[in-house]
Length: 127
Image 1: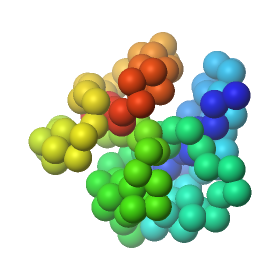
Image 2: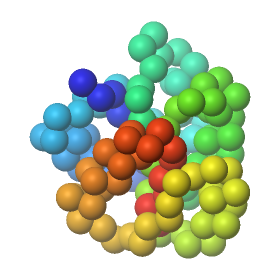
Image 3: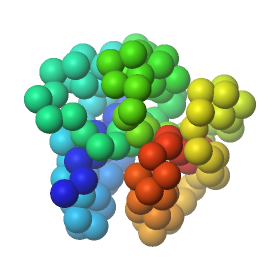
């Protein structure tokens, strides 16, 4: 089963993503409310997740900075970015993400992008 780590500052979205992912056959490895917490939790995982579903705009540490730090721990981790902030597109693409998508999106679109990222072994941005 594919393990997904959810990093999102909005409680309701963390809950929503958890429900949707579990209903679609994914295991939620954990959730974090900001980038700093995400990095700390990622270091502590005994069994690393296959994918991180990460927001960009968060308090304490944003998604880009968290992504860069997590890559120093595991340079093979796949991160699917979910953000309404289209200004991150250029920077994310320069970090090697697979694609840049527009938010809002459907549940099917989210699941499809996670599966696509797993298939291509690259990170995806869904703005």
